[in-house]
Image 1: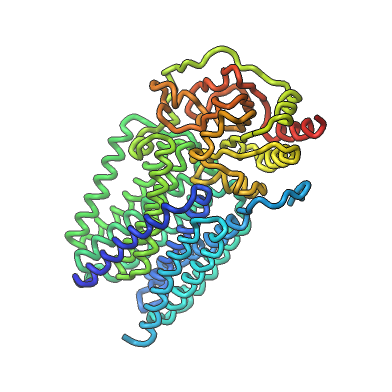
Image 2: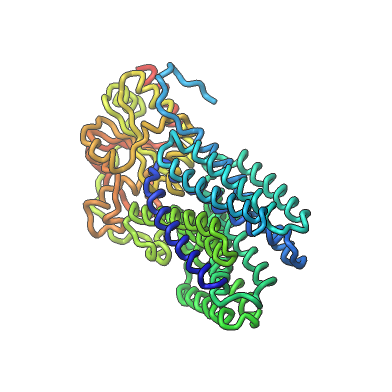
Length: 104
Length: 459
């Protein structure tokens, strides 16, 4: 990594940290569990690093480690987004009081 | 730059923007779901971009990993119950961290010789954080699931041993940083980091899990950031940092909610200490007959429910919602007061109540609801203890002194639903239970609530 790229990366990191602080602070405690689940799914983006290890021109050991990493990262991406959506679907506004809500 | 690489970089930029938009939409429950679609689209774009733009020669491992991961992920997505959300999240911290550690180890295998000093440092961080978060999260998940005992594991010389492991880990890191040819240093670091993760979490009790979860979340994110530095990939840096900071902010919030420092949670082993400092609690607890409780509720103007983790363990969310709806039909104003650490992870109680069809507009945070207690006729405390302990406010000698509480003792009357006469996780007496205006209603929360519903219907 040459110094110019390094400096650019540090910039990206600093700005992302600042932006992250701003954005995350606005999330109400009501949604903290879905938030954790969502950021988890998003950080499953390390999948793209795993894909390269599993499939590019590398020795077998890299492929195997890459395969394991692709698997765990994909579990996080698919499972994370799925569960986040399941949770967010449940948060409803007060509905007009319909006698007795039907049990699901 | 070839067109394929250009396309790939473009998808990364798009993904970064969509991730940020997605998290921004999390600021309100009405927009949150749409936000997640943005994030999902960003993820899909980045994956496709990578497959096109990188020089992929072998597809078998990629396809196998994607299929296997999707199958397991989907299975978890469908089957995991909301009560198991803390375990699931801890497990996913482990998976995320493991992916980062594995990529790092592979990267070390392939490129160690030609890495710059800086990249090697980032790689060290990636693997170290990844490894310790993996085992730490697995232990946390085990404790939450009940596979491992939830009580803190402590022994003589524990802190010395931990310090030695930590120092050894850092020592190996520095050695390999200076001279990448010493392979053994790298792999010893991995081993020590795995051990360190275990040692870090075993002394922490179940009730402190919200902090631990948030902290592990932060580590897993930062491991992904380090991966981004190693690979020189900005979208990884951005997504990892967002995750890392989210975890950090949540850790701080959770610590504030318990009035404890992070070091205190990590090294304190709170659940192990048996309270010696006796409080001013004393006298008798007064039981209330079920029918009297029902009448009190039925003829109240304002009622606030205070759910604690005991509500979740008793699976009483639906029962409490039924009772609340019944009271609302009678014209009672019903609200729910949610303490930040009610549950085993941040926000857990909100999810459990939302699942039971409680509208989110009825859920109130501690700061919003505290001023309302003095005008409340009946507060019903269900399976909560320390978060409503007035000692935290009144008794500076108390172990939980200074912890912000829901001030239910200021209400006109309080009914406490409790399994038995035992103490909370901290082993503290709760003076609330002895107050003149407090009445105890013993029994399984779900059963009691169902009986209350019947009794209110008849009154």
